[in-house]
Length: 394
Image (cartoon, rainbow, N blue to C red; front, side, top):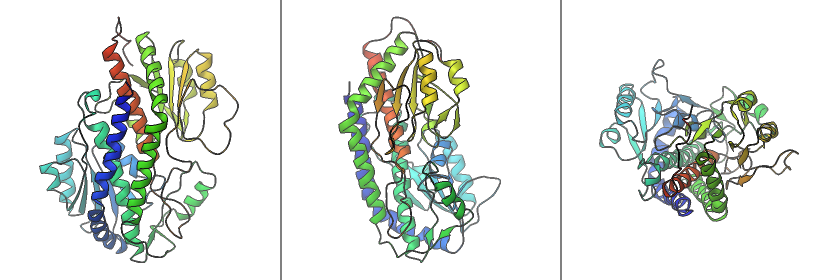
């Protein structure tokens, strides 16, 4: 069964190698974009899917100058738009690309090959991944393509940062607000497009460093966490086959959009977030019933009160967090633990003479684990279908 997880993660690692081949193109495109931004023009991010936009916008390790595209505020011809697509809604993608093209802005496309879309943009970074692990997801490519898009987005962001430093500008970058002191640090830069200048960063350094590190993270999960993923998937499968439910709290930005995404079989019922890593405890208490499972996919911290609620309701717990150097607070321990391969503070890449690392890992790694668990569940249910249907999700 664990071959699904292994093949899926290996496909994502192969995606980092494909992205590496595109680094020279990223450098060239980044230099063209950097000139526009250094002149005072704006940078936008756009997609028909909110997950791609959410991953880049107001994000740990990301650009503070980045704006969310809004058709009510038309970009100017010298502005730049990062446009992401995953071929899940081609008609909507094409309609948006036409709107973006009509602004006259410089368009950087990120997505799988599409004759209509790739000819609409000024520069195109192509997502290419093998199809071998698509069947568990209803033959939908989204669980692979969407994460390859993020790998390209962050690699390109690294080269854009480097290109700006070579023009004497260091863009202001976010630090994760879950790190002590980060809120104050970020607030001091609010409204500033650029931070204090740093020495020029050579081409390819930041993108290649990110690709090395994200591949190492994926490799760590593949080699060290596959049994944990398999055990968690088995528990989740049994819960559903027993007529109970999986209640999932997925962290914000990209992962929160995965339940119900293309290829998702809707095995899990989402729990509303309250703030950051804390689910809505009142909702949790109301929804959990004996025999259910609480699936927690967070950032760093263990939600003790949520685990206590799950135990009061006689529910199992799956935990997916990276943790910190501090010990977990006292409270119930989860039944199943999966540790992502990224480290506390999230962002992976040091920029020489800059105060924080840039380019995050959490969106890619946490989402990859979600899809690995789901893929394992699909295969188990195929081999051992339940005698009765699972309850309707609602």
